[in-house]
Length: 271
Ligand SMILES: O=c1ccn([C@@H]2O[C@H](COP(=O)(O)O)[C@@H](O)[C@H]2O)c(=O)[nH]1
Image (cartoon, rainbow, N blue to C red):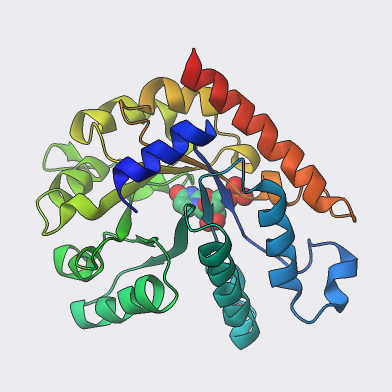
């Protein structure tokens, strides 16, 4: 998928919502636990109920890796289901990888080729040679952690190094890397006041924005400071949507929550 196709999908669906598939077996409805693959059954029901309201889905791989081989199989079935049933939907493996070059190449192969996600999140801390193997994968995106939504983001990311905040240095430097056109960035919704500065460095790049819903970030504030000509935003909500109910009606309630966000997005897009 290209940037242009993603923007076209956003305009067509009047939505830049990304739904996070962070499946915790202690939080899903009891009746699913007796099925052969509760994680996949949960994801399938959520996807079936919400796919017209979202342009992207983001399984966080931690929630699958935590269940060993069974979790990995559920992840594989989920991405296969999305790719087969909804090929227009942008998929994100939220894996936050990055290592020395040859190891990063294997991570890139695992998430972008074998599992065939459209994108993967990557930590920038190990620098150019740790990120370029992801960028080299054709027609795929690397989503670099720039300014994260958690409180710990202030420990390093906003600290000044050689007269510049580290998160700005990360974004600026990443633009010099080979195939940097395949970059997107993670910027937390809880840091809305930083979007203006970030947009000065990357006016058109897509930003994956977690932190609305359960973490309290404001969609309106993010859009006010972060929306670009091409929209350029994918706003993620995970727990706020998928755990709207833990009863039989979980998928219906998830749809209701997704619809609330989509309607707010529609208003923002057309005002
Ligand atoms: O800065 C970051 C980077 C990633 N995340 C991930 O996004 C979701 C958010 O889930 P909610 O339930 O909507 O809070 C989750 O997978 C995080 O690991 C983030 O929150 N902040």
